[in-house]
Image (cartoon, rainbow, N blue to C red; front, side):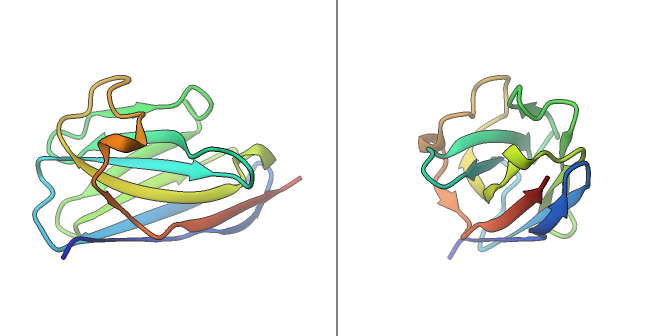
Length: 127
């Protein structure tokens, strides 16, 4: 049974940093793209970033480029999202997701491409 478990969310002041983790279990994820999405109240779920588990290639939404960085630890079966220079508009529930394939620019922004989802972790940025 595939499970994705996010952690690391919390309350932070604007300009601060958080690192989200997504622990994956239940299968081998080496051929998977791991995505990060977020959803604010009253808004649709939006793409944040993605990382290819095998080669480590990444892709990011324009709104977070230069501030957020995705990485992975193969030994721990965990992917991370380092979030720096946080803004109040980054406030949302953040989800990690997994889908079979290779990350290419713009290729993993649609949530329908992902087969597995975590339960989400709340990130709140105060002004």
